[in-house]
Image (tube, rainbow, N blue to C red; front, side, top):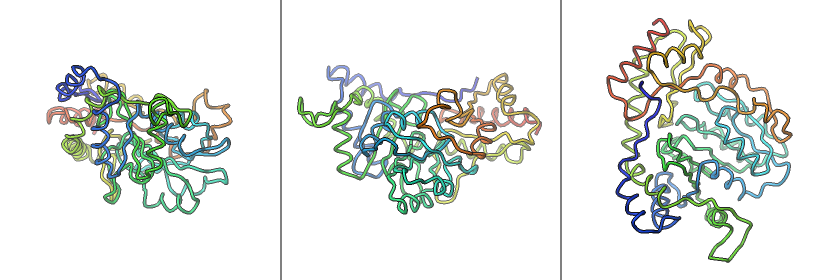
Length: 365
């Protein structure tokens, strides 16, 4: 089986052992080292490490002082953590449809979704390519909104040279399958000194110094062990990204012209870090997306469906008054057609050839 992803953290062994031998394994100097490196990647002065990507989203919303009834507009085509974070922060979720060309929220649909209660826009930079920030930022500015970037899958991606996580409060996931991992972990990036300070206090039980409580806080801390796992990967981010980009380019070249298969694009002005290589199995394909996935698995090609439904299309959200479902035909169609193929850096040329040959065979090309 050629797996959909491979976790390789062997380069972290020396740093992890160093932390273990120090006896100081909670948040400490290794976390600070990781934060400084991550801030450099995002092009901002502040990176605040937390215990996971969902926490990054929740904490970012919490420091924006949302009140009951305040709304957050986000994408309907995303991992459920995006929606759960909005609800945990006490806000109401509203949705704007996506674009098919980048799988990200459509700025025109965002403008139409804004209400007097809208306080935050949370675009999701899905699969490794940023949303169209050139069109999104004017909407944010016109309506006086706060911006929280769900950059969970887009570490190192850029829009017109500007990194993901530098437009507002950037929220990154460091889960095991992400391009950069600490096993579990998250990071919030910002250029706002005040928000960075509030985030650091919030993550440490509301303490600025020991037993000096300033707010009702939480334990959102990252450990030095987790930070040690991530530091070598941050140092190799350029090589990791280049490998993913080369693999995506090979797949695009080898799969061009297959009927019923729509390939992912890198849109002008953006860089794509290829957390996922996601194709669409269109309605004129000889088999359905689910049949395609089953045949690939049978033939030893790992694949994943990210995501099978719009995020609010589950029983647990249907009767929730804080989840305002909307008509999102593009997202619904993409959810029915999307499938991701392996693109991780551990693929060999032989693996890529096998993936290309198998996909073409299954689709009768």
